[in-house]
Length: 145
Image (cartoon, rainbow, N blue to C red; front, side, top):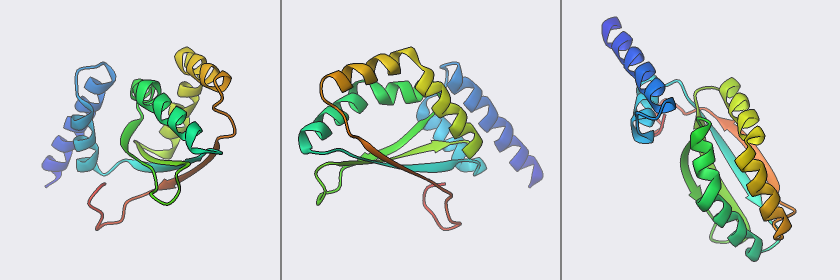
């Protein structure tokens, strides 16, 4: 059994390395992380003053943010808007660890493209975004690990 675990760990490491140099898909990385059980999830909630700003926020994520997340090792799991709260975006990211998440966020916030996009969308009226973040670890019976 230890050989299997070692093979999965080495395989996961190779896939992660390949991902960071652009040779493995996000799906392969997620599968490798699921096998090793090493990742943590970050549940983020963004609330904006009105639905118009939510449209702007969704456009920013669709057109820019997700791609920049990928560049900094932040794996997007999913994005949702609550049916009963039309001014809210909820999404989940996966990171190898909380420490890596902090590193990813620092790199993301320092990214020149992100800084430009953030400034441009603020100038167009996307302001007053309330952000909440929680780190989650999957239970032993969770379908996503």
